[in-house]
Amino acid sequence: MRLNVSAHLPSHGRHPTLLLTFAAVFALVGGLLLASSGKAGAAADPVISTGRTATASSAESTSYAAGNAFDGDPATRWASAEGSDPQWLQVDLGAGATVSRVKLTWEDAYAKAYRVEMSTDGVTWTQIAQEKAGDGGTDDLTGLTGKGRYLRVHGTARGTEYGYSLYEAEVYGTVDGGTPPSGAFTVVAVGDIAAQCTASDSKCAHPKTAKLAQQINPKFYLTMGDNQYDDARISDFRNYYDKTWGVFKAKTRPVPGNHETYDPAGSLAGYKSYFGNIAYPQGKTYYSFNEGNWHFIALDSNSFDKSEQINWLKADLAANSKKCIAAYFHHPLYSSGGHGNQPVSKPVWKLLYGAKADVVLGGHDHHYERFAPQNADGKAVSDGIVEIVGGMGGAEPYDIEEIQPNSQKRISGPYGVLKMDFTDNGYSWTYVDTDGQVKDTSPKYSCH
Image (tube, rainbow, N blue to C red; front, top):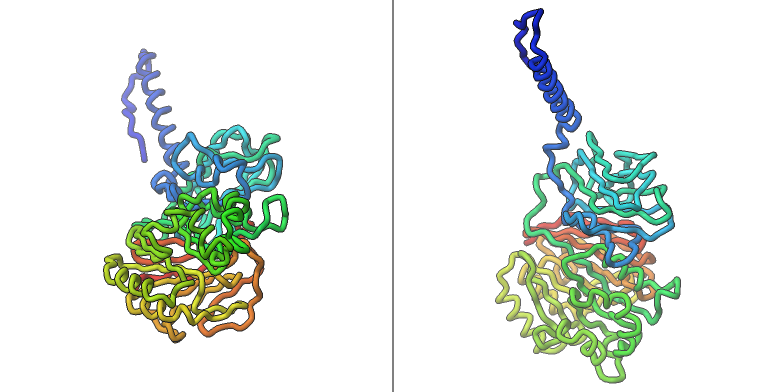
């Protein structure tokens, strides 16, 4: 842009006030030009990280969870554990994105050195910016050209003796395909959770999966049975499950597994006493609820041979008005693990398939596995149900024994949770281990 200023001023007798006015105009316009050119493109891009799912290498306490850095509230913050390098903060942008700017607002505990990285799968990372001499305050990184679904701030050197702490981490850019899908929400799901151990035992896994689940901060949590080992007494729930996964019990939507039936006080006695109306919202061990465009069905696979539950399921499916359907229960129809296939679930699968259900979650076998869409007879079909086995919540892992047809991915060993992303028209998920690493990323599925 050219600034046209009249040159027809007399060469003598110039008015000093007029000269100062012109100088001020030049300074103001020049400053505006420099400011706009320095942030060209970045200023036009919206924030695409607010409210997105976040994880971190650690958190000082539950009051300083990773999601606080992406909640749009400058009064809340994420804070890592103190006195340890490195630490990282990660956000899932929900889809592939192009990032042009990252604005970091540090609390007193800032990073002296850090990298900003992006990844398409949450495993392999590419650096898009770096700071080697940070001094806290606000770092506004512009002119970036990062691409990926995941972005993380990887702190390598603390600026203080404490940890790392961010009031806000704002990511600007564009999401592939335009704005994120409508009706989006995140759910954490897993089964086979609380062994009889506590965080004082370094080999105890359920405190670690609970910490990861809480950092993800989903809309709600689904548990696929065997919530408490071995006999699921109320005393066991209080001594183990309650100290980890019980922290977010109010947001949990559980179902029972076979271990809940072993209680000497009576089948499901401890389970019912601990969860109360959360597990029996409709007065039965099975129930349903809606979220967005999704209908969720929680079933008790210990009693799939009882006509009462089957008749209830038929009526529930007939009354459903939501486009998308997800069901979850303990015993998976198909599994490549030690327990193998569970034929008791086949009649339920037939009903779900007839109602055009989309996805079924199970546990029982202590591994992670996903299957291609299939019908109840195990035939791969385009309108089939996607099954996920997610039994890695804390119980001892099982080996993969006999790989079943249509099994696409199997992982045994790392404990972790399913982070499931739902929209009005589809879903996808990642399997995340307790170190925060994404071990598997699903295809993106559309609802039937």
